[in-house]
Length: 150
Image (cartoon, rainbow, N blue to C red):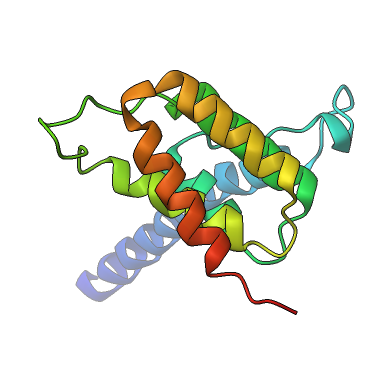
């Protein structure tokens, strides 16, 4: 009598556990389907990068296969959301400016860049941060000088 009660209890717990595992994975599969389906309102040309944080935009710029249009859009988003740099610390540039120097250096060396992209980014960044104009020009000069002459 005790063994049959024990077996029935174990079988009941196994059934409940299977039901809970089924319910655990059911909602996640619905979310994946919703995310994978593109919306009918947006065309591929209207899509914007979902991430506007500086690190994801830098990753777009650093990819060598990024197209000229994607590069230009990423730089526009950087100016729009992250264009203002902290004030200088006396004569020294703020440590956060190193990120912008890296961006300038990278766009100068990028294979799909052109003079219009570099000049536009230089001009807009200089307008937002006039105290860093000298450092911006130095970063662009270093980036352009580091390009291979072919």
